[in-house]
Length: 275
Image (tube, rainbow, N blue to C red; front, side):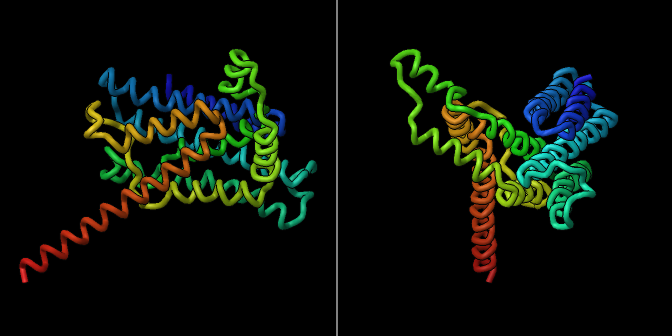
């Protein structure tokens, strides 16, 4: 039921995304809801000891819809809107069609990532490449960021209620610039989305947020990253999502480089001692 609910959210998000620019926010919320269902079905399966091969395959099919097809539809509409196109796809110029169709690569990357995940035993407890929900959430955050106004920020709402503090004019211009000149331009949106799409099919090990214990000493990276993410979400809200995703990839890369260097040093020292 939970897995099918995730798939339903993905299908409805796709329909709404293709319905027009005004429906993108609802499509984004549905992808976020699908990610909640996606987390819940795995949690429920472990809790009830109800894991099965059917559940595994169903989960992948639902993820392909909710975190592959639906984000592609949102990205398609974002690219179309950023180029100020109102006609049908076939009425556009060749380069415009190519740009809009590049959104479908997100779906391709997602299903490739899911197929690799299902047959790779090494990913039972860790990830190689970015998880498909993470890429989908990043894409879903763009319409939500573009719709933000200064009054949406909780921290300034509280400051205004307590100390009658108003939203700084410089931050208003910064927010407007972010929405118009970054997330409102296809030549910024497209590379960012394709970057996270390509990260889904890389073999870069991503550090897991799962903790075997709740001791800080044994989970420093996870605790520090979660604290960092929570602070960003409280202060920046939807704007925090792209920053968290980029940070997650960078931290994973740094950890991988450190581990690789350690392994190389170990091999070198072992070879030296044998010689």
